[in-house]
Amino acid sequence: MELLIMIDACKRASAGRITAVMPYYGYGRTDKKDQPRVPITARLVADLLTAAGADRVLTVDLHAPQYFADKGIDDLVVVAVDIGISKKARDVAERLSAPLAIIEKRRTDNSGESELMNVIGEVEGKVALTFDDEIDTGGTVVNAAKALLDHGVKEVYCCASHPVLSRNAPETMAQSPFTEIVVTDTIPISPDKRNGKITVLADPGERRVCGAATARCTGDPTRDYLRQLMPDDDELRDLIALAEEECLSELVDDEDEGTSIELHQVNEGTDDTYRGSQSKRQIYEHQHVDTLRRSEQRLEQEQRTLADCQAAAKEAQDRVPASPPPLDANALERRRAALRNARGRLNEYERARQSRETLVGQLNALIAGHESSDASSSAAPNPLATAVSRQVSDAEALEASAWRLLVEAAAPLGIDGDPTGAALDSTEARLETLRTALSTWNDAKEKVDEAKRRLEEQERRVEAAAASLTDANKSREAARSNWVEWLGQHGLPTSFTPDTVVEFLGHVETTRVKMEQVGDNRRRVSAIEFDIRQFRERVEPLALRHDVQVDSEDSSKLALAADELIRRLDEAETAYHSRERNREQAEEDRQLLEGRKRRLESAEEDLSALLTAGGTDDTEEFRRRARLDEERGGA
Ligand SMILES: O=P(O)(O)OC[C@H]1O[C@@H](O)[C@H](O)[C@@H]1O
Image 1 (spheres, protein in one colour):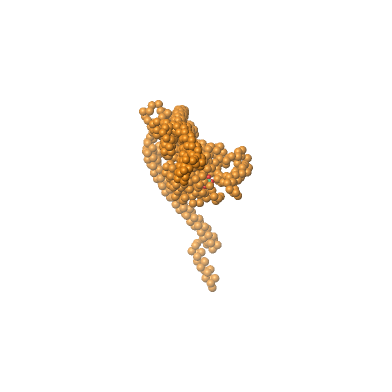
Image 2 (image 1 turned 135 degrees about the vertical axis):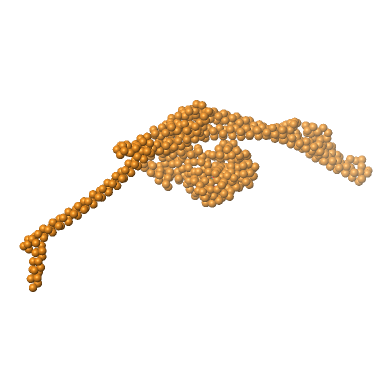
């Protein structure tokens, strides 16, 4: 639903084109109406995506037979766990140069339970690799594994694109007979669902596909990141240039002449270099080196198979009898027809002989009866006997004729004496021996032809594998020279591999960080020096003025002078403060005195006024009169 909403949002924001990247296309398995009254949910989801506004859906399938090619498993057979997946399984089998077997499976309902039916193909004694699109409950693949083990496989591996792992699947898979279960990361597997058997492949091809589609929509975030990592800063560049010697000594062997690296040059294009080295690394290492390794492995495998085919051809040839049978199939068939004919003739002859013997017996009985019954008439012919006698003659003629025909029929069989039943039986036994010899010969010849066909086919495969290896070598060489050219363009030694470039860039980055720290420290030192300069400019004139010794070269002496000046200043300040305090005290005393003076003057004025009012200027007289007044007032 979120995806539909996002697509709708993009559409309403006027997106030119909308690609939904869905590593796992959920409900994809319900893609046909294989029973009455079931939904076609895959179609429904597609319709929903289309209605929301998606132009394209990008989804993922497992294309990782390389993983199993690298394992180098002998006697591998790829097994499609149902007929529906057999086409894809066949591709995998071809890429692994392994035969294909198919399990015929039929679901009984739409609940997800499955029923195994039949294993089609040779699996006995082999290592089976079951291939499927997804593992949901795990029922299909586990049943497949059991069926395969029942059919005599030695070991079973499993690979599938999507690990849905619903219901009890984690336990089912953990307890399954699989040696390893290989899936992709289209659906994240939570840690509690994992077990030691499950290997999750992050297929680089799929990553590239998804990555490319995503990058088209979002741009490349790596660039911004690298920009941050490697700011284009003059000071930094200078600092890195300063670290050149250090870095070179770490990176380049001293004896390796001509490998001087202009680090500042490298730094100028470091983000490009870094990015470039990553992509080159992918091309140089992952693509070409992997292709080369695969091609080598394939050639080795094809050569091993060729050796097997040669051994099989020789064995088939050794099984061919030393001399061919004396008859070919047509001649043998003619003899067998002749034998059937001779048997027919023998039967006819036997019937004729029996018939003649019966008649002779009857005739003899007639003659004997006639002689005993009537001796006088014994000379007279007995008409019955005469008739039987004629029949005997006819029977004898028939017998002779049947014998001739029998002899004629037996002649092609090489029966020279009496063509009796025993002779025909022994001829039949001889023909049976010949037939067996002929069939053995033909079988052996057929096996030789088949082995030769396989050998020729395998020789072609070896040639093709050798050609691919040559191509892979060429491609790798081309990639290598591109790489070397690229190293040259970036001022790097041609001995660098992608790893050493990454290591080198690591050093550049470490140096950059160290130099940043050096720069910071230098800036701090400059600030301190500036402060000292200012300090000196202030201290020196003061020292001169106050007669304090200063060594202008020695900052520590400058500090001593500053201390002396400060001490003197402190003394002066103390003296000043003491003076100030005395001065303030004197002022206070003066003010007190003045106050007292003013109060005295005022008292004198008051006294003078009183005396004037008392009519005397003598204070004693004034007191006497005052006492007198008081006494009068009291009386
Ligand atoms: O048997 P489980 O694991 O539940 O379901 C997975 C199988 O169901 C099919 O639609 C898939 O293609 C796969 O073969």
